[in-house]
Length: 315
Ligand SMILES: NC(=O)c1ccc[n+]([C@@H]2O[C@H](COP(=O)([O-])OP(=O)(O)OC[C@H]3O[C@@H](n4cnc5c(N)ncnc54)[C@H](OP(=O)(O)O)[C@@H]3O)[C@@H](O)[C@H]2O)c1
Picture 1 (cartoon, rainbow, N blue to C red):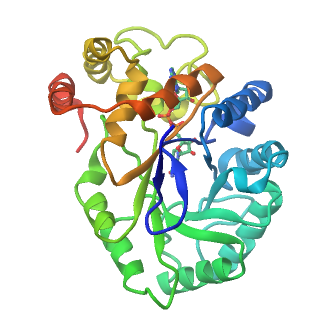
Picture 2 (tube, rainbow, N blue to C red; picture 1 turned 180 degrees about the vertical axis):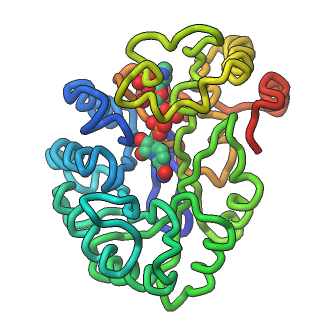
């Protein structure tokens, strides 16, 4: 496993990291979830992403229980706030100060390494949010701050408040071979400002592993077939997308790697992406995905990928 610096922070995070949306404390059985986290440590993953809202606190509680058995400096922990949970929502000062304490309680730790705004809150003044996040950092409850899915204008407005408030070090966008929107504005802006991407759904929720075939129902035991998790996958259940993804198979085969590794190496070809945050329902997937950290794709491979996917890519 290779590691990259997270923006202007002093955190060195693994190129492949493990997330917990839909999976831990939720759609994946506890013993499988524990096996995935154990496998993550075994393969050198040191970065774990969660959010207060995942499984309504269940993902944080699961991680708190399992990471509590390890020394606190052996992993880097990120969580988020914003989405509605137990009648609360948003990024007001009151919410920031309340949600960090609730998250720390569930995570059974005194601090998180990264505290992220899960979305932008149009109802809270940006200065209020940034000042509250700064209070959280100064109190030692979070080491660094980040955001997820903010627009370039929103990011710039937060940067304009520095140095009187803490500076963001990370951006968490959806980014994959199939969804490249961050390349337009967010990545260039972040590059200029010491902010790294930590990418969500780098496998398009498993679609880029090639296991979903056009015209066929999703295989049993997959996210798309799951009642608890499949609802989030509708936009990848398009036959044109699935057919295009199948055209990536010979490219991966030619390199002697799996389709998952091809997709993750594609994300990591972007220097500004510090880590691809994978989900995993089985430890074998963690193993498969972690090996992508060693894979370099050359220019002709990147071109072949673009030709294979054609116009199904969202840009
Ligand atoms: N900031 C945000 O708004 C936001 C939004 C979404 C996610 N996230 C973060 O990003 C993380 C990753 O998102 P994601 O779970 O959608 O990522 P993903 O890595 O694109 O998809 C993960 C799913 O794909 C399947 N999979 C993974 N590796 C595989 C392999 N090698 N072979 C076959 N199938 C494989 C597994 O599902 P099955 O085995 O069940 O099919 C797994 O749960 C989340 O956990 C969360 O931390 C953030």
